[in-house]
Image (cartoon, rainbow, N blue to C red; front, side, top):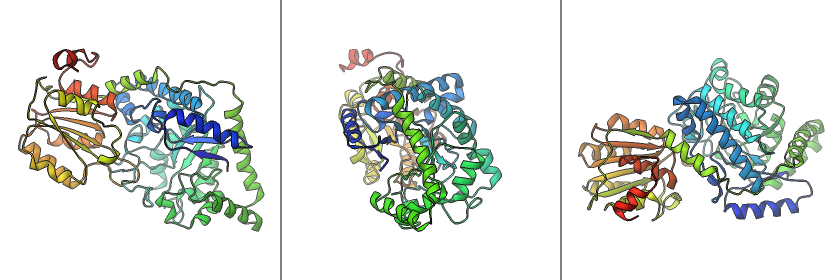
Length: 479
């Protein structure tokens, strides 16, 4: 085993676990995490930034500011990663999300255009280079124009070579030029390049296109091998061997690591995989491990003091407001309707978070629903502020609004029940609402989902100066 990927627990626990794992290893481990939105995305206690697409929104208005934020995000994430023992950042996402129905990439991408994605991902990579960590461009050769979640099924990208060269490949080319350390493969079919094998298992795509044509000499890592897009293609022992044959250096999250190792070993003994092929990967792995273990630049900052202010600035500068703010007053008998993906997994909400606490202090009673309870919404005819926490997420296979939720929202709007709307995270949900809202309905959009985002968005809903602290609300409503 050459490394581990960590998925949860607090930052302090992670710090201790990383030290423990490295103490057990005869050869230093690569310790990786999917931290596309900062360390706090996976490990509470460190900085959690808004999704990358927030930077893309800022870029459209002020490219210089967006590039600064991207570099800061890379630097802060790398510093906190080093403090926790993570030496391999599985970011940035360099997919161009030009399909609004994409359930797996979505707001994880910096944007919908090649230029924006290329510029911002490069800035983040350069920022992360402030510390001895590895960065990763993913998911090669581009997962942005799919409507299928590769965690569940195998998507297909039907474009020809010219289109792939114009849209999907440039962000990878700029990332390689910027010195990205690794490239993660995508579990998807690209018939124009290989009609039979997914990119992860295709020598044509990994060795010929990535290695030879793009000139990438760093680590190639598979996307997680427990994902449905690859497990439904072939048995795990065959997948492991084919991935190495295709040109991958590291197999990420095989369902059974012992089976994967044994399968590759048997393939080498039988001559199916040459020892030269293994030595090529070994050399690249050694170089990567030397990079992250030889530098003396270390830090103990589990939470960088610049992290939270930077995240707040990104939230403010990417905020969108439509129509006249609501009048700040007590609304006894009105409903604070909160719609989430899954009420049992809404970690960004509790009784004290602003999305619940602020309306409650203003006299609203709360109603929290998800896909299992959405039908109860029309049963209440009370005046309503609507807060929607919906975003595309892996494993859910849905990019946002369903036909049923659209019908319910249209009914509420047509009946005049909705006084104000706050949409969190998904600009694709926002676009749908912009078609249907009337001029009298106040609409606020934030790319964030955490408490910082709630506070900023609700201040905007009620017309408060975004640079003010909580003093207005404390004075008028006692909190």
